[in-house]
Length: 323
Length: 265
Figure 1 (cartoon, each protein chain N blue to C red):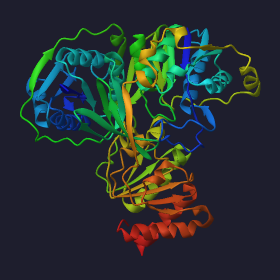
Figure 2 (cartoon, each protein chain N blue to C red):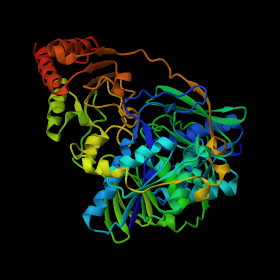
Figure 3 (cartoon, each protein chain N blue to C red):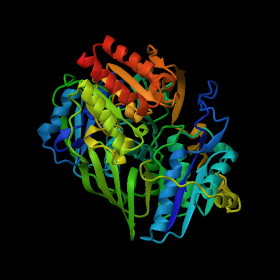
Figure 4 (tube, each protein chain N blue to C red):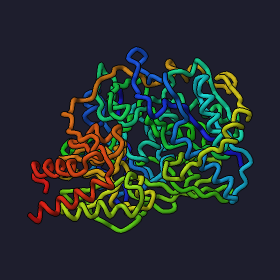
């Protein structure tokens, strides 16, 4: 097992936290396998000394590639070349949308096995074994690989540790991109839709999902948040539907939070949402579907109609506080 | 323009899913249905056809699966596809994501579509990734989780939510696009469409028919192996107030005291 290459996502000159976590995980794993971890950054026009800081997280080497950023296929070209040229046989991603796209494309390109949503990885007999929860996290499978491996972590599964190593050695790599890799062109990236709201500092979050039924019903969440002294958060589905600002979105392509209280109203609890809020101290869920996955990881579950329960809950809390 | 829509037969949402401890594969017995995420891809194809910005000559539903997966194709046709293609072969059983994507790419090559659409994920495998595998084999640009799609000439303008907010990406055809469930509200098929669906052409192909290398598919051709199956770490199960609707005031009182005990009020 010669080495592990980690894709590092970046925007506006900053590396993504999940990518940094993936480097630390790769360094740990490489130590067990007897190889080393390296990192690759595509685009972003980073100075070498900034790239070298990835060494602290465990990247012995940092490959720097000029090219389009924020798109998957140029990164597939770059990673395939670096892995082939340097005899690397494991690629690791911290998760997220781009990680899935690049990882899957890379697996096809280098004929590797691919596992996504990985929550852990270990060496077993000199080979990598990945833990992956399946079926709404009701089972965990151990996945092994014959030959090369592409491992895509579940968001927030790998903690960054910046005390692993010294400065990484930066190597610039020229990549000739495939024609088809350049046929997608980023027009705008990271557009924030809706007003800028701050949910990360709130101790109490009232989150609304599709079960609210319509945009105006977010008022129910706002009233309850007002009574409890918290802020309002939202799921990807309702943000995509234009019901609530993107800045309030929890989950895979939104924020990760861990408040004292997370009250989910009309949220089914898909994995993409769960990864952004499962570290909350107390999780309360109100949903009319008794089979909603969120009841599997809530501390208090209420099966019922949120439209009836939430207004009365707001009144009861106001009364209690006034008392 | 010719659009191919990839669809999949999955266990019905009402069926409790389990993994067979012997084969370590998903137990796919029981009631099945068209993957609900795929209905958004069919609807996206229909809206491109009806939108008039580009001329859509044909919409073909394509699946890979056992004999029974024909019913998913029939459903796809009732939702608007003109005809369908089933890739079915015992040698494909047990294919992992990469092997599946390779096999789908081979059957798609025989159709030469200008656009391949698929749903963001399958309801059972939770993989989100097959589109990117297919695209790499077909050497086409690709984007996943697209929630807005506009066509003009040979260019698609796509919007999707990625790590930092919304991205807008222009993609030149031919391309592989996976759509998110927020892209549209799939229509219900008319009774006439349901009745007529079984009369539309359904072509069945074997792995050999589309030039699939048997060494690259099936359980033996897959590069991942399921080594073990474990329960998740035990978490203290939470409290549950069932049937809160029968006694709203009682449920609210319980919630308030629960929050109060934890000093959250």
